[in-house]
Amino acid sequence: MPKLTIQQIAELAGVNKATVSRVLNGNAKISEKTRRKVEAIMKEYNYVPNSMARGLAFNRTFMVGFCLDYTDRQSYANPFFYKVLQGIEDVVYSRDYQFLMMSAHHEVRGSAFERVVAEHRVDGLILPGTLLTDRNYQLLTEHDMPFVLTGGNRLGKENVHWVDIDNVQAGRILTEHLIGMGHRQIVLFATEETINRDKFILDRLQGYREAMLAHGLSPQIIRRADELASLDAPEEVHAIMMTTQDRLLEFLDWEQHNPLHDAVNLATFDQIPMARYLKFPFHSVEVDLEMMGKEAANMLFRLMEKEDSVPNFVSIKTKIGTAQQEPQNPV
Image (cartoon, rainbow, N blue to C red; front, side, top):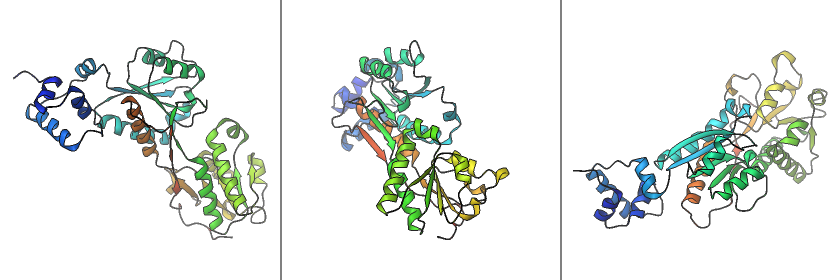
C-alpha cells in the first residue's frame, strides 16, 4: 500500500489536516482522545513523517535555530552553556523538529544569521540577549521571525520574549544564607570591568545590597584584588561573596595563598564541576540551567504556534546549594 499522506490520515481519523499537524508537533492543546486516535492510525499504517514533505504541506521548515556570538570565546568553554543547550534540544527533538546551530556577531550584515532569518530557513530562533542589537531586532521583526532571548531584554523593546536567571533573587538568598550563619561583615568582590559590562553582575549586587540593608548591615563592595588581599579577618570581614566562579578560583590560587582562605567563609553564584577537588569549602546557589533552556524552547514553540497570552519573560529561581565540604564555624 502506498504511504499515507497527512490528508489521508486526517480523513481516516475524522479530523482536519491541521489537527494531524498539531499531533505531529506535540501541541498540548490537542485532547488525549484525539491524539490517541491519530497516533493509532499512524501506527497501523506505519506512517513516518517526512520532514521535507511536512514543510511543504504546512509551509514550515520544522527547524528551530540557535544562535551564538562566535566572538564570545568563553561561551564555548563554559560548561553552563551546554546545560542550557541540552534543555533546548530536549524540547526541540521531543517536538520532532530539527535543530540548527549557527554563529553570529553584533554586526550581522551579510552573515549566515541574516540569510537564515531573511529566507525563513527556520521557524523560530533562540539567541542570547547580547545579540539583540537594534539592527538584529529590526531584521527579526521585519521578517516576522519568532524569537526568544536567553538573558534579559537589554534594548527594552516591546514584544520581546526572554528567559533569564533571577540574579537579584540569587544575590539576596546567598546573602541571607550567610547572614543566617551569623555573619555580619559580608564583603562582595566584583571587578570594575564586569560591573560595567554584565547586567547579571549588577543584578547580583542589587540582591546583595537589598539583603544587607534589610538586616541593618552595611554593604561593602570590593572592586580590586589588592583591596581584597588587604582586609583583616575577622575584624573587617567574616564572609566573602564572589560574583562568578572565575573570581572564586582566582582567590583560591594555590601559588598566592591568602590567609583569608582559612579565616572567612567563601560563597559564589555558580556551581563548579570541580568543586569536590577544591581544598577550601564554599557556599553557592544552584541554578537549573536545563530548565532555563527548556523554558526558552517551550516559549518559542508557543510563539511559533501563535498562542495567546505568551508571557514576555520567565524568571528562573535559584536555591542554596549543598555546601562544598564542611563549612567553617559561624562568627
